[in-house]
Image 1 (cartoon, rainbow, N blue to C red):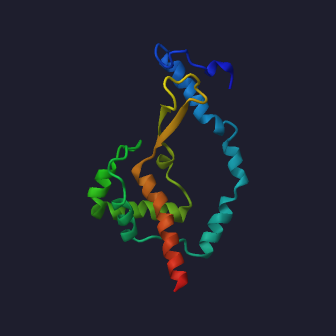
Image 2 (image 1 turned 90 degrees about the vertical axis):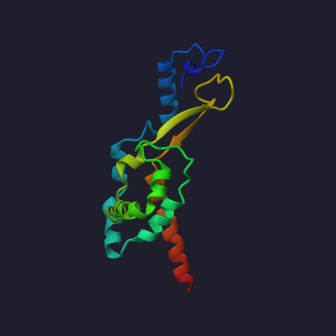
Image 3 (image 1 turned 135 degrees about the vertical axis):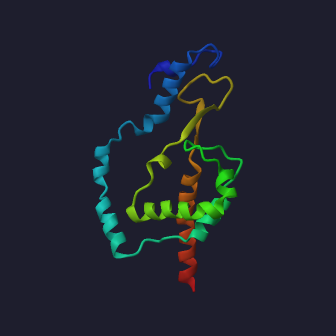
Length: 167
């Protein structure tokens, strides 16, 4: 980026927040600037789906989903969907079948739910006061809790497959 990413000597104090927000957004998204939907054409999703049609995809059980829901850390921040981890954990018995349907549909269709790709991003200064937007901030991403459950499921399925093969 250009030299305008430097902050005043006193850091973020007395700094136009909208300008700072724009700079942080530019820094945090710089890695994806060259990516377009046209790049997705390089990946043959039909080929992946074809292989999944030949063999059954690894589908997890409702019990595994319930186990993943119960493993959520209740003190973690709530994501963009507004569903806190404590709620999913406390009502895991009732919510496990619903979450199982979402996860199973995602696996069968080879699609990751769009909402789960979104995160709340909080810039956290590495040093105080921060002097440079490009180097003095790290991003903390808060994903929806169900996205975390969905990400845990393949790991559970892989462990089960490996233990089954060893027998």
